[in-house]
Image 1 (tube, rainbow, N blue to C red):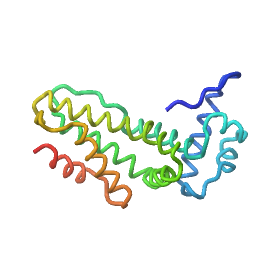
Image 2 (image 1 turned 135 degrees about the horizontal axis):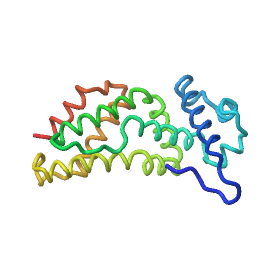
Image 3 (image 1 turned 30 degrees about the vertical axis):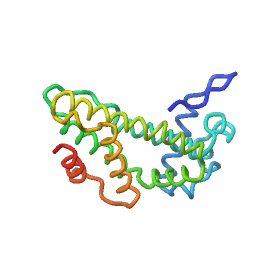
Length: 190
């Protein structure tokens, strides 16, 4: 998710990194609602305007920090020859769940923010949810190509069902783990 581009002086990448790092650290330690823009810029050692030159809101900043962190856990997967799609998808889901278990409180707060700010909701969906949905859809389409999942199944709808299940569990503070990934996939790969 790219930061806003402005005409004029180039954006200082170190300031952006410091802001994202400070925001994520403070939100993890104190909770999203208890962290102010003032605390983030103080922790990052930059001016408030530096933050607003890059992001419109605290939610936008935190979303970008979480998005980058998600890529550390579950970046777009590489395909391993000889490994079936179900196993690969299970491993991918477990990585996503590891991240959700780390940043679940933050993501729940971002989901709540999205309910009150339509611009942020659009950004959250476009920059965070949709890329993950597409990755899982690709897994399912590959499974269909390899004959591991019937062609009659709608891969996009199955991806939506997978996401719906784990977002529901996240929102209700249920355990996101290997067992849940296996149970979820056993309902799809019949």
